[in-house]
Image (tube, rainbow, N blue to C red; front, side):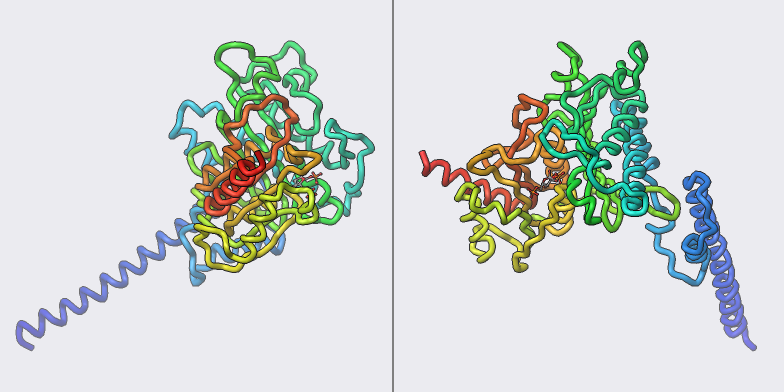
Length: 418
Ligand code: AFP
């Protein structure tokens, strides 16, 4: 063997030993990452038993080194962790953390009740009629109580306004603690505790919609003034969707993010961040049964939409109708797939059905944050003055192509009618 042969054999052996070392190191680190992730999820489960078959299969999935492990699965970020990081980046919002945690807990609790409606006899009416003149369901009342307790006990909210209550109230009244710190929080919450409650008895999707305002720095800080700020003043807007999966969709005005409840660990995990609504989409979501009562502009728009003859529509898919009768569920579908949701005014009720404060404003803030558009038919929802806490408004939200076009039809027909 001459020198060149010797060098070649030596180099080959060195290469083999490097490969072996790399594989050992790689396996070690992969195992470490997986173990760390498992520990984290066990800890964050807060004592949730992992002995069920579903749980053990989950553990098996994470411990099996042969299974492909995607980075997103290993590094799942919980709702709480995500919010800690988000608020650390914007220190002026740090005080929101307990509020966000309380919303997460309330959504989880309401979701649990939704899953037990039939088995725990939670369906049916409560027997009361709410301020809107609607029959309250048992769960309307329970969800309202859960939301008010959770928000007020965060210690950062001083005023709550619920769609189910006649007027906004101080947290000290909610907690029956007249002289306490419960009135000192610097934020106010507005919410619809159980949106789409007509869907409850048939097991269809429902939701909770919420928004957070900062109490005015100057001037009166009474419950009414504080909660009747314009939608553009919202600092947090979101909803919980109780459906095939339970999602929290939320914006702190730094993008719109989706978290999904993992039934095994009981944690909400970030499943989509910085969601963008498609510029145009195939879905249109309107209660067609009311068509005869709508402004003719809406019917012209929908008829042109169905025949694919509206202008500037960049989506080439065939139009498709979807309507669940729960704003959260219908808007979520539009957010993911693109298109337009509409609840127009009628001849008898020009202001429509949906509430500006509890429904339209938070939804509008979220859709805009995702790059979509929210209109009352003639202008931006978020710019509408709020004169009354139970004020209603026509609402059109979704992809920019469809909503801007609807607005063009409305403006044209209104001008023609003068
Ligand atoms: P309920 O809470 O009474 O079911 O009303 C739900 C809702 O406010 C909203 O979530 C729906 O988009 C809208 O009403 C559906 O109303 P219609 O049944 O008139 O279509």
